[in-house]
Image (cartoon, rainbow, N blue to C red; front, side, top):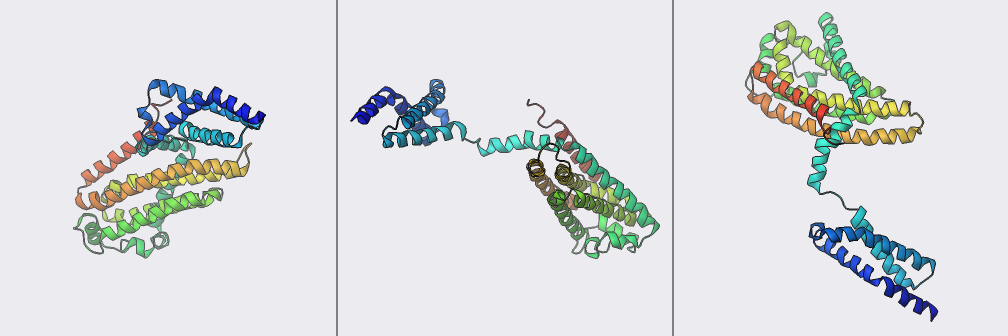
Length: 329
């Protein structure tokens, strides 16, 4: 009898707040938060705290179990409305592209400098090595990837591959194989980073060496500039993606090797989360490179135009990753 009286008294004092909170939650769940007035939005957290307080008292004084269950359900609904609401997909995508991704890439700048240096230096070393000893070409590029563009190819064959009409078995197959290879390298470079970043750095060196070896095949025939222009049209995006993916893998490896005051697993997990954000953007870059490779490369055969497109893309990425997200605090 005493518990029933206490429950009725307790409910009478606070029931109006619960009813108001339930009404607001119903409106939000059935319509939209935009339907609420400014006063409603101000009342919502106050009513939520009042309901939590009532739930705490009800549990502590062992009031009616049905009342405790009602308050628990009402508090849970209010919690998810206040703290569990997510931004619409459009806003999430906009926030990722304008802020989250470029900031995450900038956070990897030491590793990005290292991966870019590995690509460039290995390309230069491979170029001079193949020019000195052509037999090294076969060791750096598989026959499937080279597709006949090797040290024994004639100048006419190589020129036709750069400027000729698209044909079955032509440079488009070579380009597709190269794009597929670069995509695999990007994913592996990130995935193998946990092994102290060593496999990632090896992949970066291998990929740079391939580029240097290919230049060594074209340069002796006076086609080095033409090959560079052909590569630029999609390579500035594709190779930038590889450099960023390698940086993400090296970042994980560095965190595993030098976790600092954090545990090794905690450091690796934090680096992995940042790297995963970066890799989402890398996939987008590879898709853009694929479009440039599949369309612009086929339609544009003038070296100056190819260089202009490649240079514009490189400038775009540099400006984007340098300035993106800096407008927010």
